[in-house]
Amino acid sequence: MVNGESKTDRKKKARARWISWLFGLAILLAVALFAAHRSEGQEFARLVTHARPVWLLVALLLQMGTYVTDARIWQRVLDRANISRPLRSYVGLALAKLFMDQAIPSVGLSGTLLVIRALDRRGVPRRASMALVVIDLVSYYAAYIVALGIALGIVWARGDLTPLMAVPAVIFAPMAAAVPVALLWVSRGRKLPRWLKRLPFIKPAVRALGKATPAIAHDAWLITRCTGLQFAILAFDAGTLWIMLWALGLAVNPAPVFASFMLSTLARTLGVIPGGLGVFEAVSVATLKLIGVPVAAGLAATLLFRFFTFWLPMAPGLILARREVRA
Image (cartoon, rainbow, N blue to C red; front, side, top):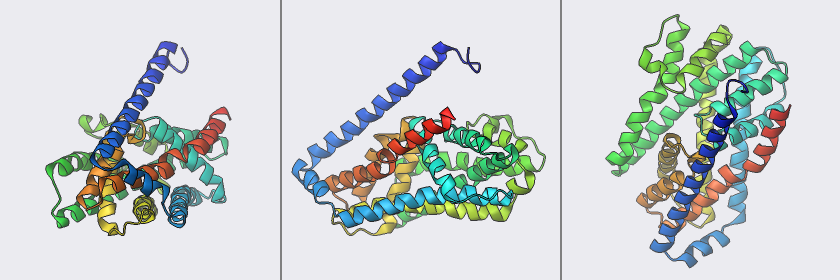
């Protein structure tokens, strides 16, 4: 037994992760085959090979902006705890966290645990790092709810809202809203209902709140600013998908592309496959088709987007995560 977990249990978890990866790749292959059947394969190849390098560079800069913005959230919170460090010291950690969250589907808990242990090694007091976890969770879900509401509003205004889009959002929104509400409720000394404690991301959040510095974790202005930064990360990602369409020569209104991205992200979040592999691509192609993007172009833009946001950061993220774990 190691850390309360047997070797057999670890093997089962590893096998389950491999199965989920293979299942995601199978879905992705099915999406590609479907798109190839519905559209000309030569058109897809032409779009990808003739993508404009300038726009791809812009997409790369936008993705770098997501890592810097994520690191800026941590820097803001730790500055509030009188821990001053340069922004670049957190950027590598943001990449390592991204890898853990994408490789191991755990509602972001695997990456959060990595960050806490990394901050411990850097001499950050546990109460300050727990305050960072609380604010990171609250601001993320607050920004996510706002962005999802905007996306549904855009789709509704266009007359494209269907039950297939609305139902998952209606189910997930209360769950996401439960995080900040529960944390505010507990911070005032009140107990949570049993059913709320069963949600996977409530228990660790409440546990973190109990160990966090109250003056930081309850700072409303700090939470507001971090929520704005979390929204900026979502906007950078949606902007990357929009830029990919421009790189393929398609001038598309950014508002419906933002809606497409958020709905695809919702599908990715609700799935158990690492990084929503295959699921994200399928929903993205389908929702882009609703706004007039041809299937071949939608698939090409989505695959380019996923290369920049999922596959490209995996190698440096793996190296940085292994470095943190070995340390």
